[in-house]
Length: 304
Image (cartoon, rainbow, N blue to C red; front, side, top):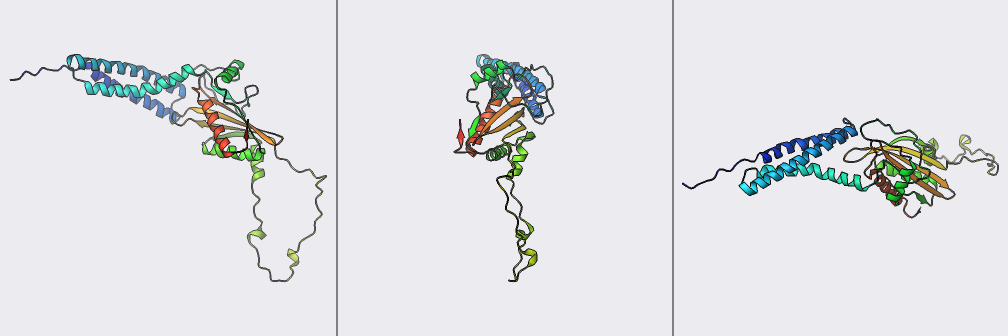
């Protein structure tokens, strides 16, 4: 009879697959529960960090399983491969976030106006947690932002504030931002609403050719435009929104400030996350993306 050696089983490979399933499930549940606003962000971050540590252990067990397969032919190649894949599904996103944490500045509040940033109409809620939190208006943080994000600057548009306000509203609606509060924006929008048709225009009557005294025009005095004051639209508007990131659902608060100067309108923005001292570059990306969208909508009238 031919000799068939008995291959040993690799416990490391078996534990790699079993622990990998638990680790991946733990990380996914943390993300899903936070996206559904059931789990707070600090708790979700803590859970994901624990899952990352377990994933590193799973990866090490998978490597041991492959080594045992290579040297003594131990069973567990499929289990080691499964465990390694599940570990990488956790480690790769955490590694990318860690890279941003190290390379990007520790900021949680970014503004296009460093000297006089727009002030919140309703201060964003803050719940103390194990994540450290500093003052977003700290001059040191503002100077750090100037060095790290030099392209995050305001925009000047050669147009009236009402036209720019329409573009801001359209861009915010497309981004699915939720309006929190505003100053001056309602007056601008109301001034742009079309006047509804009158009852006579909506239901015109056919004339019989005879004069109708009830419909005869009544002479009115011509308005004195030199002495009458016309109501002017506001030259300043401040709008506050709230939103969430697409995948992780990290809450962000956004301010848009519009200032009309002669025949131009200047747009400033401010974005902040609510937890921790590091936004991983999310606020700068939000401002850059929104202003780029605004440039496209107001194409041809953007300036520096």
